[in-house]
Length: 340
Image (cartoon, rainbow, N blue to C red; front, top):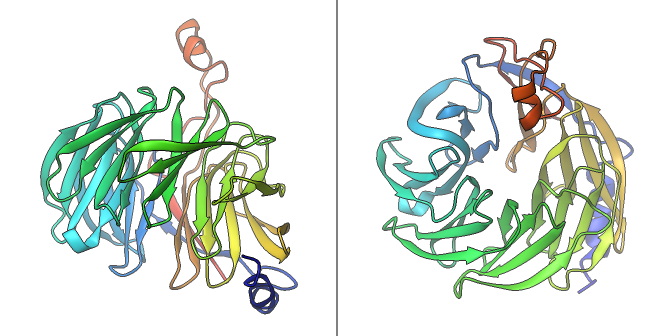
């Protein structure tokens, strides 16, 4: 189980010392109305899927428009099944899943989630199933990717956030309000393990090293937890920036990343057996809290925008959010490209 550490450490030292070398290479001006959430990158097709409130923008990796997927009310994320020529969007406000054709971006239909507020969504290749994680419903709806038919519901009793798969029949999902990871048997559709993430609070983004069985999970108290994906043991808790909502892992470089809404990208390197340290806090921009990694080019794409003053709080808005969010400057939506 530990034989990989020496060659991995050597690779890391060659690839990322003494600093990471990452910096913002360019900014892609996109514009248009709407917020954003999880971006999804298809390295083979050189496409970036960007949720924008009621539609998904499809861009090439130079930021040029390829097309749009319409009718995705409250869209949070996109899952891809290239071998089936299918894509799936999680639509939080309508509690639906839009099914579309990857080659043409044609909408093929909508499926109804079995819980409210679909958020994260992923395709699990060994079972050919799509998992929609329903935040308000505190469950997951599972669909057959080929037919779009629902095949089951998995209750959690807590709010699911982001999820990843090992590609071999296991799905790992953060439970935000209980600070746990639930391990799902993708074939049986049951939760087989629950692992505490203490001292992490409010887990959000997650990434996976499938070769060495490591999960990288970021949260609200400026920590990343490195978790053994077989035993559930917490191996390390390196410090990251504030406002983290996304995580990524580059298997060739052996680096983990956290995208932080404060305007930094945390770069984490393995120093030895179960020892991880912060290599660098790379400046990005305020609001750049989610990201997508291109494993071919080692570039990271982070959506953000310009922000104005927060609107004044009213009794109605205070009931939903004690501190109003800063206003988005119209037409300022952009994507940062960070690389070496």
